[in-house]
Length: 367
Image (tube, rainbow, N blue to C red; front, side, top):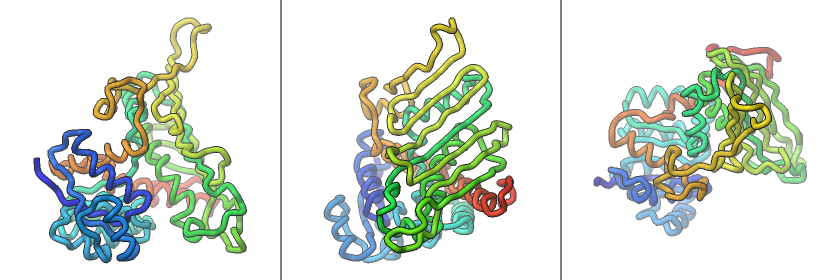
């Protein structure tokens, strides 16, 4: 087994999740590469030191430049705000260091295009953080669709709904002050990625984007609270996507329905260890959705637990991402989703913004 020095830019919500995942991935998956938490960088030297002590890093970096250029950092994880993704990723890639970047990939379509180009130019391992599609249940849903278990797909409905800004009395924050931090930039990428993974590339969109609460604490809200899209996939399937951060009662409403000619699939991230499957067979009186509890027979479940129905959790999704990132580094072969997938998701978002502005269908190929 070989060690690999990991540097993480950002030690907050996602930085901590990635640090925990890198500490656990070797034991869970018996990886050939074993991560060493080498350097962490927060927003200030003081916060960097706090993250070092709390998360078990060997050292704290004064800034991201020091982290990326440090010779003992052999791979970089970007868990910083999207405005910094491009400059950090390009610096690391130019040094030949693999990069895992949280979604969305950069602050704009131009950012993600530059990151994809740099990854292609350098040939360095790269991945983007779409973790929810990695649950054993969603992995199994992809398998069922690919195997034609529900027949030819005719319809897809997906949502990513949460209520962290449902209360209009909440004050304005960084989440309400830039386009990239709105619902299209924050929540939508996950479900667009799911739609692409489950059904295929999206060909065109018709969208409507809304700011539900125009002000917060006397401060203007500068981005969107919710958005919806009618979508057409390349393979002819029709669908609808909805995203909201003001949806009372939804905590992690990443959910989808897939309808086919011989059955249907339902999934809800708030019950992430279950998949609901309907097959149009048998007597009508006995038909209905059946709940499948994930277990060792489903993808990536057994390394976490030998017991069916015992379940996996959010942090386990990040551990699976860590396994995939290490595999890409070790083998030199790309592991989905690479930066290219992050850019494709951003193209859909750009088309959705243009569709809303022009009130018409927009082709993804135009972006």
